[in-house]
Length: 339
Image (cartoon, rainbow, N blue to C red; front, side, top):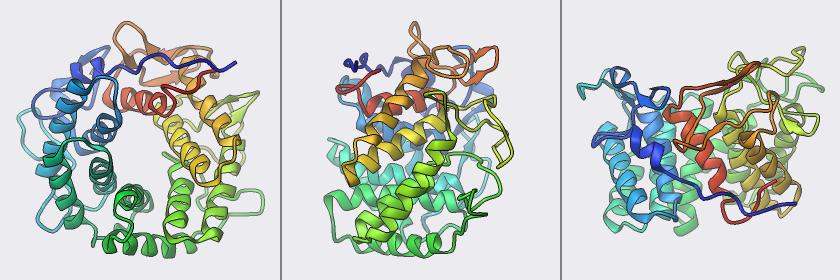
C-alpha cells in the first residue's frame, strides 16, 4: 500500500556546497575539495533546489549559488564551461557538451519554478543567450528540450523554445532501431537512457505531435521492460548494456533511476496512464532497498545518497550526482506515493 514519502531533505547538499558551488565528489560524506566543481552538478542542483518547497530558506540559498555558477559558466554566445578547480579557475573552454544541455534545462526550470524574481529574470536571459545553439550530442540536445519544455509551461509562444523543439524533432526522426528486438538507436544502452524518450514526449507535447508522443512512450515502455527484473528496477550499469547482456549488472548508478523517474512522471502527465505512476513507484523503491542488492541507497544519518549499487552492497561515498538523483526522484512523489 502506498504511504506518504519521508520528507525530502537538502542538508547533505548544503554540506557539499560552499559559496561557489556544489563539489562534485565526496569521500564518505566529506567533500573532495581537490576534485573541484562542475557545471553538470550545479545544473542538477538548480533544478532540485527550485523544485523544493519544504525548506524555502535552504532551497533559496542553494538555488542562488547554483544559478550564479551557471551564469558564470556561460559565455556571451551561450556556450557553457564545465569544470572549475578548487582554486576557482575554469579548466576548459565553453562548449556544447552535456553541460550546455543541463544548463539550459536548469535555466528553463528556474524560470518556470523559482519564486525569486531576480533569479528568474537572469535565468531567462541566460536561456535566451543559449537557445539558438544546437549541440551535436544527442543527450545534450535532450536536456535542452527539457529546459524548453519548462519555459513553454509559462510562455507557450516563446519562439526560441519552439524552434528548439522543432529542431529536436528532426534529430529524433533520424534515430532508428538497431533491430526489431533491440528498439534502441545505439548498439548499447549507456547513461541517462530514459532522458531520450522523455525528450521525445516533451517535444511532442509542445508541438502537438501525437506521433512523436507515441514514439516516446513506446520507447520508454521498451526501456522500462529491459530495466525491470522480478518486480524491481535493475538498471543499466556504468559499463552499459547490450542486447546479449543478462542482468543484474553492477555498478548501477542512481542517475539511471532518476532519469526513469523523470520520464515516468512526464509520461503520466502527458498521457494520464497510471502505469507510469507504477514506474515512478519502482524508482522510489529502488532507492529504498527494492533493488538487486536489497540495500537502501539513502543514508538516513547524513541525508545523502550512495554513489552506486554494487553486488556486495553500496558504494559508501555520497557525491553530488548520486545525492541529487535520489532527491530528484523523491521530489516527484514526496507528498503522494511510496511503496
